Image (tube, rainbow, N blue to C red; front, side, top):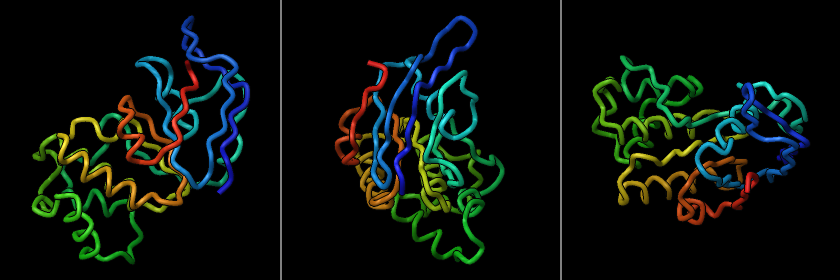
Length: 193
C-alpha cells in the first residue's frame, strides 16, 4: 500500500481557518495516530481524506481507487436492524452468519447479536460500529476516536482485537489518549501543533 501524501492542504469554514498549507505523509500498511487538541481539525482532515469534505486548496495523493471503512465519532448504525445484520451490511454475501457471530463473541457482543441496535447500550453500539468497520472490505481504515465510551477493561479487549485485525493495513486513527496509540503501535503525528 502506498503512502498518503497531503500537500499544501487548506480548509476554512467561513472566517475560521481550520488549517493552511498542511503537509503530511501517512505511511501505507501502518497505523498512524493523529493527535491534537479538540477543534484543531482532526475530524475535518479525516472527512477530506474520505472524500466527504472538499478542500479549499492543496492535494491528497495515494487514495485514488481505494476502498474506505470508518468508525465515526457518532454511531452510524441502522437503528431497527439487529447488531449482526448491521455488521453483515458491509460484508460479502459469502461470509456466513456463523463467522459474524464468532467475531461478535470475541469482543463480547455474542449475547446481543439478534437485538436491534436501538436497544443496545452505548458501549455495545460502539463495538458494533468498530466490528462493522473492521469486517468490511477496505484498503484504508479511518478511526475517529473509536474507543470513546468504553470502560477501561473493555477498551483493553477491543484495542487488542483492533490491533490484531489491522496489522499490516493502512489505518488513520484519531484519539486524545496517547496510551491507545501506544497499544496500537501507531506512529504518532501532531500536524496541528
